[in-house]
Image (cartoon, rainbow, N blue to C red; front, side, top):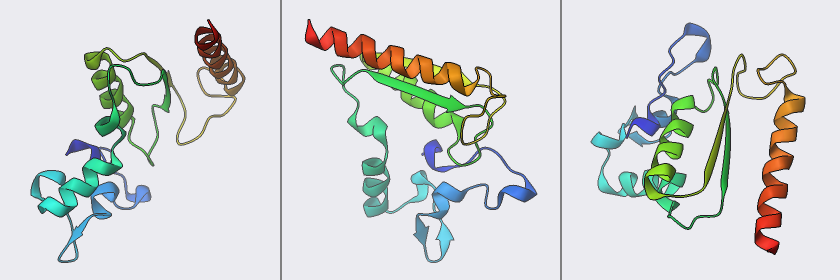
Length: 129
């Protein structure tokens, strides 16, 4: 249920519960725990955590620490669940960035690109062996 509650609240960010706000009941935002069963099933279908397995394809998750569009917590929960299942997951937190990478991010965008290429090449080579 926490995946549908946005943890950051500021006047400039609009609805701090915008993910739950996409799930409505009688015109009100609904959190997972309060949602009727059809909405709970839809929320579960929308969550990538639902589809994780121990033999999932290798996962590279890169998430910004100041993202106000998709809460950073989403990636943390995804990575935690993947590790719990024994799935192959690589996680990179980008500091000093909102929703999107920049050259003043830490690491900068150019290094993030290199990490993505290294991940892809490593797993493509693993598959070919």
